[in-house]
Image (cartoon, rainbow, N blue to C red):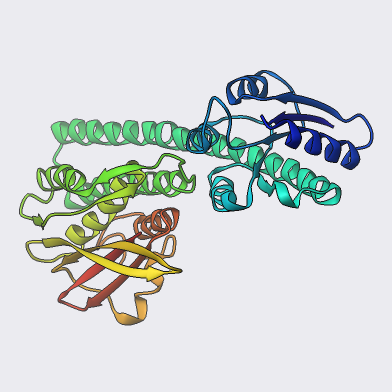
Length: 360
């Protein structure tokens, strides 16, 4: 067992090394560093089975070490060594990617042996998930490019053929109807490819978390959605909050809901986006939740279908009535799950729908 130990307290080093030799009696090789910089350099350049890392060093306090560990990219599993008062930091680091944390006061042979083996196995699964995510990303790029290119080519050929035949002879209504059906099918396939691409993309929970100003996203989407197809639509929003999350996913989230609001409307679409701040206490902590309400004057949804609309490929209307992939709201659900949020909808037939998005 090749172990990297990053620890600056001589007494702790002695105890940890003794425990390691007891836990791994054969071929236990320990490399010890007493500064974070030297230890991380060894971690990134060496080959180890496990890394045991303290949180406080002469060259790095707990906050700085925590940031380094959160940003660290390594194939080596990490167990963070904590004092009792730092257990909450250890739990948070596990959420951020390290494999486990171990209070030094609880250090003993059997526990260290079990935690190390579990950490190695968890890291192996984590690497597999990352590889699978990379493969899925490659598939999404192929889906978007390799599938849509021939669709665009077919659409172009269909247009050229229609024009050339029109120049040679008068096309009958039945002929024109056939060309329209081809165009409609190609558009439906394009919608499906776009929907599948978004659906697969949001499966990968991005580690990028940033401050997302919802006002800026709404400005962009209003300009995009009302400049062409829905130029008779009205999209208004009041002062919206800035939330923590993945901007690209939140953009797709709002775009899908707004597009549905505009599409499923038989009159001039009117969409209103408002925000509500919800304060609540939980486990002695004060939390602020942001609820974003997106309400429209569309055709509405029957109550019996409200729960099922978030299922993939579930459609309440035929493709000929309202084109689309049937994936938009399932993408919305996935993105809210990625942000540990909730989505709900209230609706009344003929009067419109209101989607509520709740973020912590």
